[in-house]
Image (cartoon, rainbow, N blue to C red):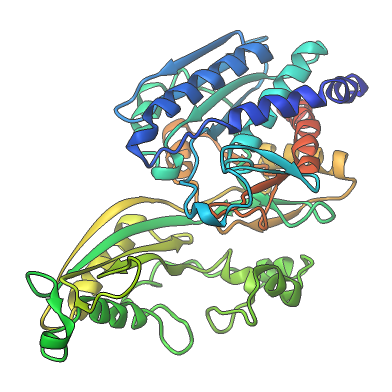
Length: 457
């Protein structure tokens, strides 16, 4: 075990430089102009797997962006760990809010600033370097498979078909994912679940063309105003979502779980200060940690219409648009919630406008049992390197493919993330602490050691 740490310390500068090179590739899956960058990044991931000691690495084309598969099979009789991650990243907009170029990684105050630094290049790359560590020190206690996709940020539209068609290739004993966060480095935690997702776009149309707001204002329904009223009505005075049937399938967290969550160190004052807000907001009757973990939400991700250019233009617009997402908890189904949301928008649309709503993507919530072999191994590994037992918590984000993994492959998932909620995921100035990056590389080999011991016992 000392050999692992010695090897990592000897090569830490190279481990960092390799990640920085990967972060320079603008692998934005949502934009067609980055298609070439997606291919370049997939090729870089493949090369990094082979350089780390994978015996095989292959790029699989899909109707969208490529999937990278790699493996190191040392002994077919040993347990196999399937590592999942994604090399695609969110768009960097708004660019003017970045302190440095989103694809020009810089290190400042012990943190890497770049798009994808934490989500998820920095986190999946820890597993690549952990593989190298174990191979080079001649102690790899498991077989390892890698499934690194390029479409997670757009809902993984092609991964499901790949998984269904390649069950034998992906056969394993557990799935290990580092795409989540810890409470803090002083208070390590392990996510025991992630929320599901329903993401739609709505288009509101009023008049058949933009109108002069002086000539027609007050006589014709303004699509922006109507859309704003519809959106405002989706929460009541207690910030409870008003869509009929929205909460019908929600499994309420037990009092025991809520008490366990309450043990996690948390300061609302520091939380608000970090975000630059004077007060927090959310569903009445729940704490901030509960609102972001065990409760479903509905949020506006974007709204636009009319004239937004420089200067003034007195226009009554023909159209207005919004992107709306719901985070879901067990046992809410994304298809059902999407239909409830769309039907409700049609039902509350006022006279004088028409609406069109469409699905972007969705995914199901997922929970992992804390008595599983994988969770036990992860908890032991974190305790080994952090010196503290990790706190089990529910994550607020979504990894849409998780439920399908379990359904198709029959495997439990373990979330062992090393990011922080303050890492500006999906925002300008995304970052990842060097300490977290190196701590992940240090911890992951112990997971393999403990998992092999538990399964083979």
